[in-house]
Image (cartoon, rainbow, N blue to C red; front, top):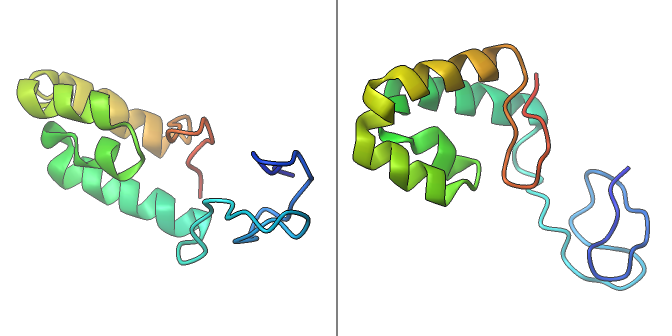
Length: 99
């Protein structure tokens, strides 16, 4: 279970706001974890050399570097694709993107 960043209260993993303090949790309720995994996989597959999947998951700095180096000449994008497919890729908050 995740915890509220403001008050430290344990919150439901799908909650949009903390019930104790009312602060937004930052959790996007529109996408299920499976949707996030599929979107990340497709973005990496088709636009990986531009780092679009990194931007989508909050890694803006790494996304810019991938954009400028064309995904490390495709090698970095291929490694990311493998990490996403094997469910070892993490988003900006350190959560593993999984099916």
